[in-house]
Amino acid sequence: MSRSAKWTIVVVVAIAVLVGALIAQLGEEPDGAVSAGAPVATGGQAAPRPEQLAQARRAADLPPCPAGDGAGPQQLREVTVLCAADGASVDVAHVLAGRPVVLNLWAYWCGPCADELPALAEYQQRVGPEVLVMTVHQDPNQEAALARLAEWGVRLPTLQDGDRRIAAALKVPNVMPATVLLRSDGTVAEVLPRAFVSADEIAEAVGTQLR
Image 1: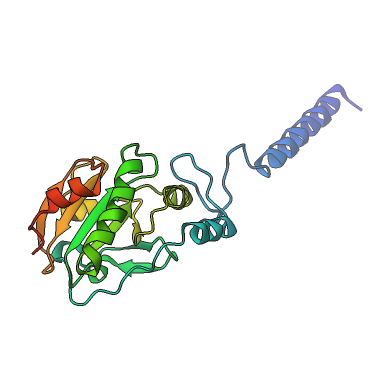
Image 2: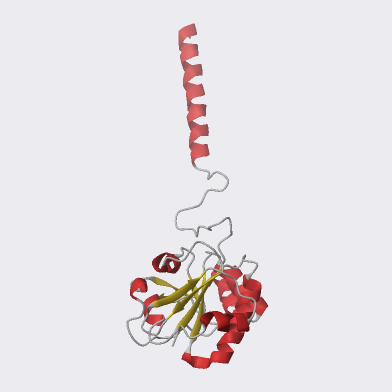
């Protein structure tokens, strides 16, 4: 065999080895890769498994999101989010229609919310069914929100809105917590970008604005 033929064989074998290594590498997913169809976590949080989320919902034991009577706030029509109690998609305007609403926007990592949400629950007990106190969780981590509500003993109807669609529609400043007072006709009485620490403070802030 000539020297040129030997070199040809060596080159062909080397190319074959390189091609085989490349194919093997392409067949492996790099660290952190996500297969098509796999749940993608947001905010660096692992997406909870369905059974974990179901367990968190049972522990929180939230009331169902109400069915309102009427069209609801104009700004919120066609805005849909999830009901935290069961994960069902709800029409926000319809849920809030027909009665005065104290709408509280919060997140599980919000320090002042630990005092404010129990105060809101106490305020709801005081005013009764004439006024709806509803909370809106504004972070994608549903499981953490449910855990916080269970920890604080707060059982208020809650919307899961990780994309802040409700805040955007109502033009609420990008602060948390914040509270929006909605009249029974769906108009905004006031936006309160502040924290409350007691039911008395909430009652004073609401005053007669929802009548």
